[in-house]
Length: 413
Image (cartoon, rainbow, N blue to C red; front, side, top):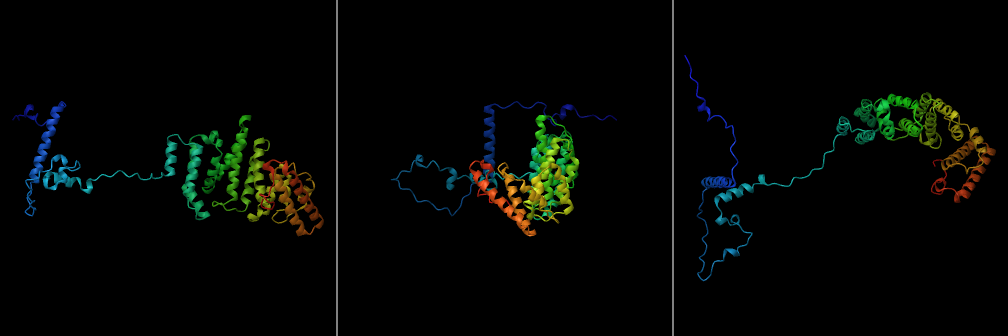
């Protein structure tokens, strides 16, 4: 049995037209709009017919002597929508719709921009190749500012949980900046990064960088930049080991250990490494003597090891002062010997003058304790002579080297 299929022509009414209709002319468009408007009005009139209320108040007849006011005297602000008696039902319906609060449009309120997560900003910059050491330091500073300052343990825990230091170290390695040591050109990164690395247990990575910088060979024109980078790295480590995360000063034991480790790593034959070690050692000399009262007493063996590291550096003034602050056996002999060999203080810089004055004052206190009246009298004469020389020289010395009344002489200068 053969089944007849439907003719293709009979399916044309179900199939879409292949060609779109041609665009309408202006006249045809206007005619279509008028037709749609008329149809819309007609349907609205049908759905909302005219209503006649019985309680309408009849108006009083107008005397024949008075002429009605011409339409031209009506205020231009009035409209059929404002005259309810002459309003069409369709107009009232449209007005009700348009006056609905749901259809009222208010200007879009500009909300303050939501701060982006610094980790998202960091990852976005890394993925686009826009991350730099300067921006990485800014990222770490932003993360640190968001960590509560409740207590030192909370700060350390918050920094460790953030893993911000690890993220920066991974970026340095993935980008190749760690291998070619280009990130050392921005030493300020160390100040922000080292605290995170110590909180996250990554301090050994920092010491690896110290070792790399110690053996790095540079041309003469960039040696100063190399020395500045190594000094900045060691300074960041010393600051981290001498203060808590909340900024409180602690014992210098960990800092002494850091100096001894740097002494083992940095080659003495390298002039840049030698100068950086000397600078790091000097950074601990002031808090170990002039500001020693602000910290707990250090461990005697660590203190002695730190002093031994400084002896080949030939820092005689600092070594003489450190002898007075030995945790167990303070000794004034080296301090007295240094003062006897100090005849002219005019050749000293302002910082050296302050240090000599502090040394003399501390030596006098020590001599009082041991009862050495002869040496005490000599030290007092030395202080008087030094004060006279400084007062006489005040008219010739540069302003930056003056010791004026704004900087009084006392132990905490």
